[in-house]
Image 1 (cartoon, one colour):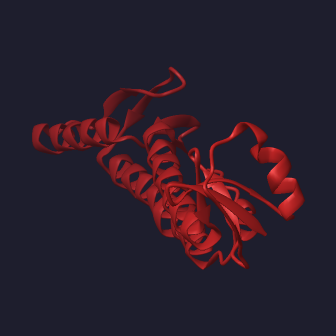
Image 2: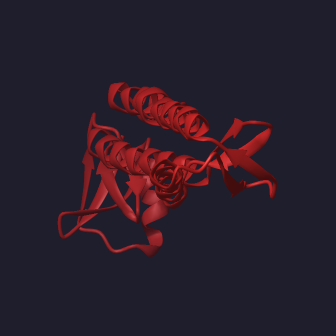
Length: 168
């Protein structure tokens, strides 16, 4: 591989010297070097493949975290034939409603679900529903998230990293 530099910054790369010289007709450069290193273009700059791999791993992990958070904030569990959201606001509201049922001695509490159904929840139902939401979140964070994180960390090449397809 050949690289052309201008003021110690790589301006372009090519497999052969001739290919590089053909590219350079319209570019400013001061040196041409032959190298055994592999370079890739990332965000407008040529980086060693090993450096690029670390940058792309970091970006992929940020994507993994964002998608996991999105899965929790927009997810739901099925309970009593209805969909209950798993986001923090809903969990807080469910907790407050459960405490109301408990402290006021109510038999049940009417809850409007994600799919617009009114469901009567008893104190026992709140506990069961909370368990389902906890299981859902654990499946996201302790299951899928950690699995993708491990795949990202273990990728040794850009090609291996590109094969990591994050889906929640």
